Image (tube, rainbow, N blue to C red; front, top):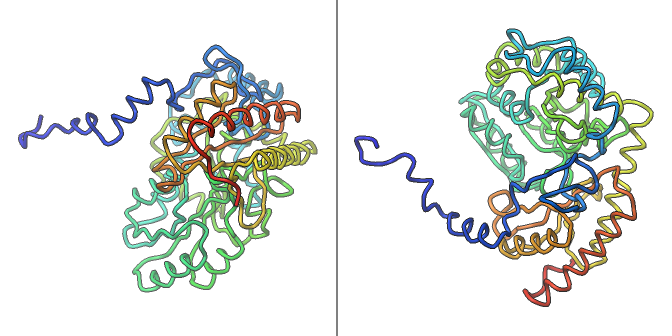
Length: 416
């Protein structure tokens, strides 16, 4: 305890969510930290039972692909279990260099840099490129790693309401008199809402106000665009986006992150980004798996997998809508593998999740602060490897759960 008599650990006891957390644990309705007991697949073993997996980011279903497993195994056998050092010192292998070259070619940029995690990629970019004199403008629904990078940089933070272009322009106009440079950072595909940023209009505003633009393609890379290069490719603004971020933990079936952009920016990050310089290199198996998955995405098979996951998303979305759920739609009509169902009330979301869990269907729950107050939702997502029969069986179970749930707890938000 400090001389002030205040225990810095006191905040862990009696915090605002402690009682709710305790009640949820006692009722076995806590939707988080559930234990998986099999590889990521359309149907998985979780805590002793088979459950249809509708809460994974394994969009292309490549985590179980023999070629990806072989890539991980070959890297493991060649380089061992770990590199025990940073990329700067003794943690760079030929696999890293091949992966960076192929990411740059995939993204259509001059260069790329690979980080150990996606969180570090955002942290490493924003915490390095921005300073206290700069301004960063972010969508209110941007991923937490973007906010963390902004806070680390100490740049002036100007958020705008999710996908509202008039609010973005207002933030840009206010930033005109700020002393430093201005960077706009948005998700290409928003991780909770599943909708797509209006990147053409955002790029227009960035150019009009002399701002730089960074797009987080974590949930768009490997899914959208002819090459699978993300929302920037799909919406035709690749040459107008200054920096793109992506991860390996979604479509690329591994763990890690990357930044792709001009050679001068990437080289600066290589020698200045603390999140890159002062963390251990990714385990070789993760790099080998990501490289193998990327090569599948860039092969003739890639467009087929991307078409299949989006076909499954449409089928799942239409099925949920037909059951009377309020499915959150993208204003520009673009379908992504993320299909969120609005519940509004946090407790109802938890209770509905538990009923689905008991029925053998696993989904994710998003409550405040992951979403705005009153915006609780069930985040569902599909894979290319889901077959129609599995999705239809899941819809049957979901329909039964909804009917029983509403009879006991009242109506859920209906479609608009």
